[in-house]
Image 1 (cartoon, rainbow, N blue to C red):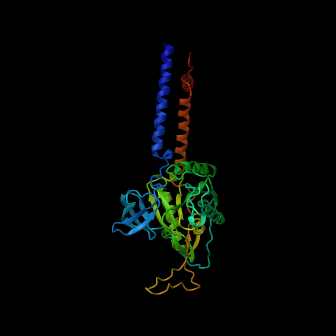
Image 2 (cartoon, rainbow, N blue to C red):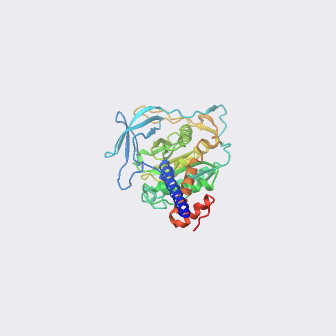
Image 3 (cartoon, helix red, strand yellow):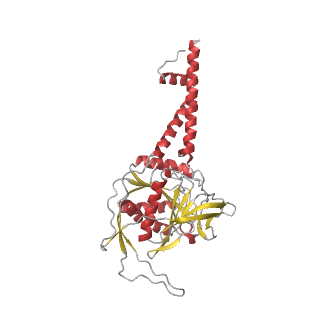
Length: 398
């Protein structure tokens, strides 16, 4: 009888621990890591896109992602909106105006001879990857999707090269994450985790995409050069949201001063986009499938200059804007020799934002717990009993 009671206690302890571990895994996955939520993913087999309107019915923007209630939108002129209603059948969303966003202000300086020179910034890497690795540009690549070898990698490569040129260690992972479906973010999550683990310390993590709306939404001219606009996307549901928004606002403020017209807008969606893994994580949309890849690459090169300044600091020169012509008149260009205003930009803080590393830690906890459960399930009852008896300093008697 004593032997049977001992065996029963060991079995009960094993069952309780196993149930506890499974419950913990389910709970942690609900919190974030395993779920890799990107709830605004939009099915490629359903042609079309979502359009956002204000309460008066005026169009604000369009995007090839599903818009959801409580999403937020910051327009090119820094007006802040919240989505209050969505009509999925008509692929329309309606937003309430919340007020204007105040972007960071930079110290104006008098020395007009100072050109842009990045300073400081400290050590660390900027990590790049492409969740939708098939995304391509029809005018250049011939089709909108090339599995595993999308034109999006060349755009990301141009961004990487520009960052390297500016003195930042940028690393691009070209892993594929096909198919282009709701599971792509789950697959790219492992890519992001591996990048972060191998390249600590990390300054920022960027997921490079392109949109799927008519080209008119992205066509622009920046400082006399034809290129694509760029949209930044931020996930609401993660502890790094504040750090991510802070970087996005700084990037937009610098771009608006030095490269007006480059940043299209900022969209804050319900998904996570794996941005909870590391602070200063952003998703960039470089153009759309209808725009040439060259236009997107020019935008990536220009954006790299902005990101270098946002991270390392330095001096930016805002270009004088051309005067708005009256009806029937031609556009008036700024006079030659006009240098505009110079602004001093401080580098980002080298201290890790609050919550840094929590996403990776949760991921490791879930992975470790999953391994334990796998071992419990795969072992025989006697092997499990021996393991747990040893854990509590007892030897199982036969």
